[in-house]
Length: 199
Length: 199
Image 1 (cartoon, one colour):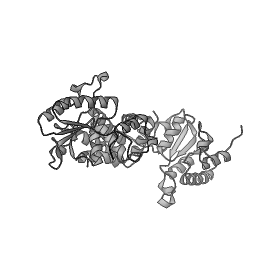
Image 2 (cartoon, chains in turn yellow, blue):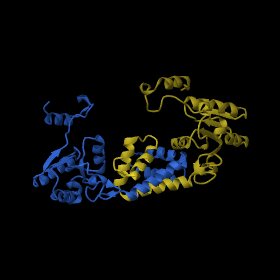
Image 3 (cartoon, one colour):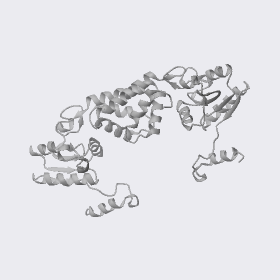
Image 4 (cartoon, helix red, strand yellow):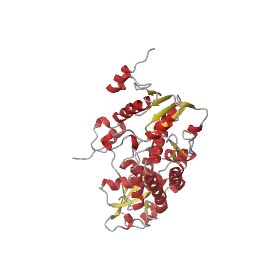
């Protein structure tokens, strides 16, 4: 305990729980907050409490939202015949920022992981299947991560959804844009070759 | 606005104001906080508010503390004849963690910077000089950073303190421990040569 202050220690510990923040970073952030104008710490403190209170999950797509159903689910300008399935809200955010997609989303809040006891009933798959049962969706794009669990989840979903006669697709995996072959790992290069498209 | 939520936007903005946190990191931290158990965001929110309320600067050494005077200033086991001058509270924390120092500290809360209008009166130098006037200090170690401003501040202080007949020293600068010459920049190598010590 460097400053002999439990309050400072608690703040360092709270910062450390954030992703990508180690002991040194947590100490640096704490020092910053304590020496910056008090309004800054107050703004962060209030924004945290406020966001956590206001934000819930949409009862339709399970994405994070202030209103239920969320603005995306009720936006008439979006394509209501296409659904993109992502692992987490951050996935939907990243695809949204890409700007190439204007359909709806469905957030699973996880992936299948039998070793950790996460099966279909632990994810929001029942809600996804109910949504598809209601009709109107013509294509489901599966955008789970390219990990073993993400791939297994994609395969499981494609089988379940295929039974309903709905088209199931997977986002492309390959060499990132702007990146040369030199920087891609073996699995990515292998996938890029397998997934080649006609020019 | 990706989630169409002012609360989320405010939280992203608040995270961005932290040092070393860019737009993407702020979004990642926000997503984490919103999907992690609610207690986590609450703990960080409360720790921020609590630390900012409890922590003040010690009226003796100007370091951050919960009690005034701070525990270091009143600790009888510390060497009360040696004073280490640092730019910021983080400097005192880092030296304290090094474990080689058991004297007292004085935090300037900045360095001389005439271009930004920061002169001796903008720093806690008056308090430092008053402290030295009271007697008892036999050595002042200046540990300001090795930047142009830090060096200028060290020189200014050494002149002022020298007039009082107190020994003034500067922490050593050179090649970091565990680091080879290959990784040191020219200025560091040059300083390491100048500051060589007999073996």
